[in-house]
Length: 444
Ligand SMILES: Cc1cc2nc3c(=O)[nH]c(=O)nc-3n(C[C@H](O)[C@H](O)[C@H](O)COP(=O)(O)OP(=O)(O)OC[C@H]3O[C@@H](n4cnc5c(N)ncnc54)[C@H](O)[C@@H]3O)c2cc1C
Image 1 (spheres, rainbow, N blue to C red):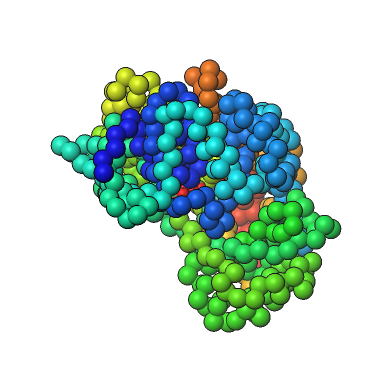
Image 2 (cartoon, rainbow, N blue to C red):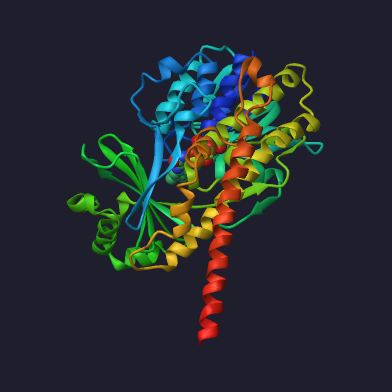
C-alpha cells in the first residue's frame, strides 16, 4: 500500500506528537507513524516543564491539561550525605506556571493527540514501524513501514521528520554522522510506594557511592538509582537483599517499603547516552528531539528539549511546507536554531557526569563538599537554576510570540553567572588544595 502526505513524522513521542499537532493546526497534512499500538510504555520521564506548559497555554490547552491528575513541584533539592539543600526554585520563571508538573507521559501524549485529531490534516498511525527510508536521486522521498498486520506500507512525503528517539532508524538509514560523547552511568528505574509524610521536594539523594532520585507520584515514588555504567550485572549477582539494603542506606525513611521490590523484573535499566548529530538533516529529512541529540537524564530536561525542537521546527517549516519548498536550507535553519540549546545543555550534563564519577568512587558515607555548601548560598543561584531547568536555554513560542526570540539572553546570562560562581568556588577549592599540599611539603 502507498499513501501520500505533505509531512511524515516518524515516532509518536513528545517531539513527534507536538510537531504533528502544530503542523496540522497550520493546515498541513501530516502523518505521525508510531511503532507501538498505544502510548502506554515503561516509564520514560514524566516531567512537563514551565516552558512546555507555556506552549500549551499559547495553544489554549493549558486549563484543560491541568485538570488531568498531576503533581506540582515549585522547587527541587537534594541531600548530599546529610546536607540537605535547595537546588532549583521555579517560582520566578517568566511563565504562567511556576512549577514543573509531573504527569505520566502517556497522559500527556494521549491528551495532545486527542486535541490534534480535531484538525483534518492530523493522521496518527499507531502500530506502524518504520523500517527504512525511500530514497530517490539522493533525496529522502518517504519511508517504508510495517503496518498493524505486518504488511509493508510506503508513505511518500515532501518531508520526513525523524522523531524516533535515541535509536532512530531514520538517522541511521540517512547515514547522518553521530557524535558520541559517552556517559559513565546507567539508571535503574523502579517504583516504591509513598507515604504521606515522606519528603516532597527532595529529588536526589547522594550517599555511599550512589545517587537515588525519588520522583513524587502521589501514591508512589518513581525511583531512579544511578549506577556506574555496565555495573547492573554485578548488582544483580550480589542479589536483591544487597540492592534493597543499599537503597535503605541512602534513604532510610523508605525502610520496609524496599521489600516491595521482589524481582529484578520490577527494575528497568536505562542505558544513558549523550550524543548529537553533526548534521540534523539531508534533502527531504530532518531529525529533532532525541533522534538529533540523545540527552542524559541529568536535570530531567530531555522531554522539554524535544518539545521545544518541535515548536521551533513547526515555526520554521509551516510556510515552506505549504509552499512545497522545504529545502535543505530551510532544514538547516532548524538545526541552527536548536543546536545551541542542545549543545549548552549537553555540556552541563557532561560536567555533571564528571561529578557522578567522583561520587561512584566514594563507597563510604559522603560529606558534602564545602564548594557545594558555598554555591547554594550564592544569592540568586536557585532562581538561575530554576530558570535553566524550568525554561531551558532557548524557550520557543507558538503564534506571534514564536516570531520573536525566546529568552536566550536572560538564560545565557543566568547560566554564565551560575557557571562563573561555580568555577570561582572550584578554583578557590583548588588553590586551597595547592596551599595545603605546599604546607605539607614544607613540613615534610
Ligand atoms: C527511563 C527514562 C527516563 C527519563 N526521564 C526523563 C525525565 O524525567 N525528564 C525528561 O525530560 N526526560 C527524561 N527522559 C528522556 C526523555 O524520555 C527523552 O529525552 C524524550 O522522550 C525525547 O523525546 P522524543 O520525542 O525525541 O523521543 P522519544 O520519547 O524516545 O519518542 C520516540 C518515539 O518514536 C517511536 N519510534 C522509535 N522507533 C520507531 C520506528 N522505527 N517507527 C515508528 N516509531 C518509532 C518510539 O516508540 C517513541 O514513541 C527519560 C528517558 C528514559 C528512557
